[in-house]
Length: 253
Image 1 (tube, rainbow, N blue to C red):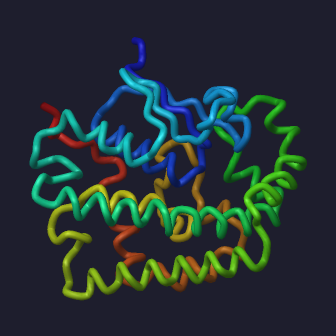
Image 2: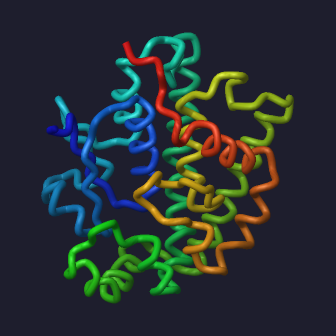
C-alpha cells in the first residue's frame, strides 16, 4: 500500500517528534525517512529552506506547527488539537514553545550528546542508518558543535531558558488544571511535551523510531531531568506521553 505522505526527519529531533506524534494521532498513513543531522539534505534539497520536519503530502510543509495543523484538519471538532474557541491562544503558546523552548532544549541536548560519542550514536542514529552515516559520526560531531554554537556558555544559558519555561508552565497549572487550557489536551500541550522530551526523557518519546532516552542519554543529563520531572510542568510531559502518545484519535471525519 502506498503511503499517503512522506515525513523527512532527523529521527531524534524534538520538532520531528512533534510532527510525527500529530500525524500518528490523526491516523495519517505516512512513511518516515530518518537521517542524521546534515544527511537530511539528501531529501530536503539544497534550496533556501533545508530544515526538517518536512512533510511531502498533497502540499509541502516544512514547519512542525504547519504539519500539526494539517494533521488536525480532518478530525471532528471535539477531537481537534485546535478547538475553535481557543485557536488564537493555542497558536500563540505553541509559537512561544517553538521559538524559545525548542532551540534551548536542542542546544542543551547537544551539549550532552556531543560530549559522549557512544550516547550520540545511541540517540541520534536512525533505524537502518546507512554505513556512510555511521562512519561520519566523529566528523559530524565536530561540525555540529561549531555550526550550532554548542559550548559551555550556550548550554548553561539554554538550561536557564528551559527552567524559565517550566516555571511559566508551572504557573499555568497552579490552579490544578490537568492541561494548559483546562480539561482539553491541545496542540500547545503536544508542543510542550514533544519539545521538552529530550529534557524529561519520557517513555515512548519518538514512538518506535527512537530508543529509550532515559537510558541512552549521558548520565550528565540526569540532573536537570530529575529536577524538573516532579514539577507540574514535568508531570504534564509525562502524562501527555502516558495518555496520548500511542492513542490515535477516533475523531476522523
